[in-house]
Amino acid sequence: MSSRSNKSLICISCPIGCHLTVEYDKDNLREENIKISGNKCSRGITYGREEVLAPKRTVTATVSIASEIQRRLPVKTTKHIDKVLIFELLDNLYSLKVKPPVNIGERLIENFKGTGVDVVATMKLDR
Amino acid sequence: MREAVFDTVVVGGGAAGLAASKIIAERGYRVALVERENRLGGILNQCIHNGFGLHYFKEELTGPEYAQRFIETTAGTPNIEVFLETTVMDVKTSRADNNNSGKGSTNSPGTKEVFCYSSRYGVLKIITKTIVLAMGSRERNRGNIGIPGTRPAGIFTAGLAQRFVNIEGYSPGENVVIIGSGDIGLIMARRMTLIGARVLAVIEIQPYPSGLTRNIVQCLRDFDIPLHLSHIVSRIYGRDRVEAVDVTPVRNGKPEMEETFKIKCDTLLLSVGLVPENELSKKFGVKINPETGGAVVDAHMMTSVDGVFSCGNVLHIHDLVDYVSEESIAAASFACDYMEERGKWPAAEQFPTVASSNIKYVIPNSYDPEINNRFFFRPMIVKNNAKLCIRMENEDKEQKTLLEKRLLHVQPSEMVSVNIKSERIKEFLRDGEENRLVFSIQ
Image (cartoon, each protein chain N blue to C red):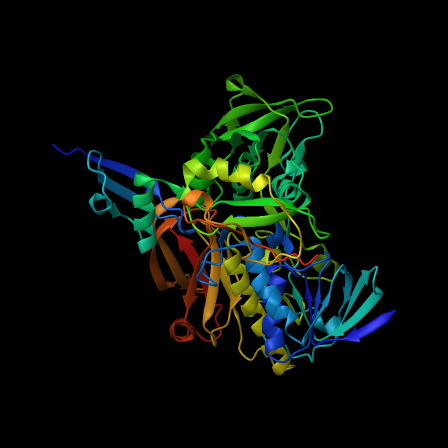
């Protein structure tokens, strides 16, 4: 016997915030078994699947920088990262100390814990 | 006093001012971009979270990245001169300018004098044909919502706290209560959590959240932060520093004092709305719309003062920066048209737009039948599958429906836009009548 489950989610892929219904089989959690409705674009499908299998988020934060302009350098993950890894990632970021110049997209952490996710600077600070 | 001559002065170098400057310079006019801070980008510099640019750049960017795209084009344009750390103090216009009735200007518009000061240039007078107001907005604060109690340290507006955390590198506190579920408040709930503070509650007076739904999910639910809808903070405790707040449920607009509970905290963040920053505009006679706190603008985004345009949060509060860019580009294009056809512009008569059932305001305040008009409006209700109705109304009260449209989901925190083509409007236009365009949502 398979047990179908329902979950109501709000897609966070963009500001529209589609109300999704995700239907899945608890005992047989496979991507192709997860049915999603209520989405206006394909990102809703990816989001709905991920939320059931392993929720992921893009993380934005700041790291210390010895700049004349400001004391924190904003950064982001290049891809979504598993929610459970967020605080470990932050600990890593908070121990960094960056020196200018730094450009947008400059890599500060590469392939965090083998996830394939990098952390890059999101602001250009020349001095 | 130093003097300079430009075709346009853009006041404010944030999202709106950057987009406007870019367009005007591309059309071949010389722009003075005046910014109070020591760099361009405005509030985007402190909005380090992502979600910007999905409409405009078709990709997801953080605030600083979004700003940088515009800053780069600005820096590469010889037609733009940027005045940093420079504040516009006053604007002098000729008398003839102060009567843009939206009915077509017959006066030859005079030049304007923009008075600025900065430590670098001293007092600077810029002589210009047009002005684009792009000053953005300010945060509402404790005084605006009148919370009783003591006046200790530890009470910040959410945007100020955001600046402390993201730019200055200070944490405002450890145990945080947030008043108001506006987007900045929600973003700050997550931000404070990520820097190691505990966010104990978000308190919202309305029965629905005032921020975007996605922010409720990714900023509150992700971190199990409680959201108390229909609640207010009824008292603040603490002598030197905030020690606790009283939280009271509200039913039918009445606080139920006997159900009050106390939350111990050391920090209170206020996210209770933004107000367009129009001190300068008011000073030189720009008419203000009481519903938006921004200027009254005609179909070409021109204010009541001839040759002065307004866009971005100084015109009305936007929820997405993408719309700010879009609106500013429109306003800037109209400013260029104005300069091209000086004296005989605009050619066509304009007619009023009216916000009716369940709509707080419609921007712009009039429309031009000769152009394709784009309208922005803010719903006052939360509803799924709502119906937008736009009618043409005249003296005899006979209303003709110009457009009906299903809206999947409306809520006050999400602005709605709609385009109406010139041909469609002309079908309904009647000679010598008021031709009011009435917007409603059912």
